[in-house]
Image (cartoon, rainbow, N blue to C red; front, side, top):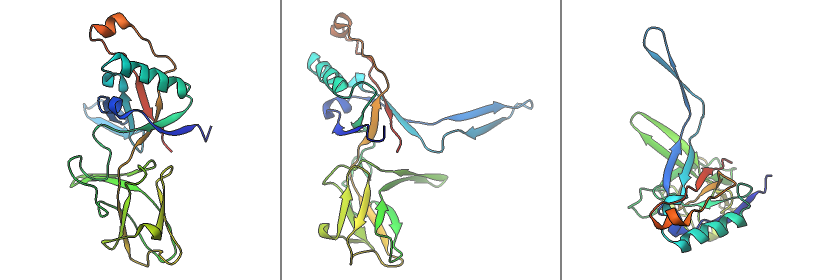
Length: 213
């Protein structure tokens, strides 16, 4: 179902206590000479979380159950804020319109996909950002902030579109800063609740997995 996504975020108080992060798939083949060969199965990483660790009270637990039922279990995806990686810069820094380079103008292309680059001296990986938080996206062209009326932002796809007459010229560097959510779904169609264990400190497991566009 291409439209099986609800543009709603899991309550922030639950997301902040969640655990998890990126997952990759790598095949490792042990050779007869004792060495190994590594093969990348997934081109991109995929986030996986456990929201159960964010449940601190019966009220939180009910909020999860209500949210779970409204999503019909695994059927509908939703937004989730990664507790660590949720904006175009480091967690302790303010968002800036020059945070991430998202493209170079050619005088014709008006639409640019939001991306985030993870890099160091050894390598890099580019991630598509498809669920920016509405009202947080700031764009610059050659380091100069772009006025809101010169472009539009699709918060459901992460695509920025410049209006006619404002399309970046050849060689113009387009950058952006933003906050973003991760598109996820429940990775179970069942939530087990045991109040006796919950009161004693046991927290239910509520697995989430990223939905790749």
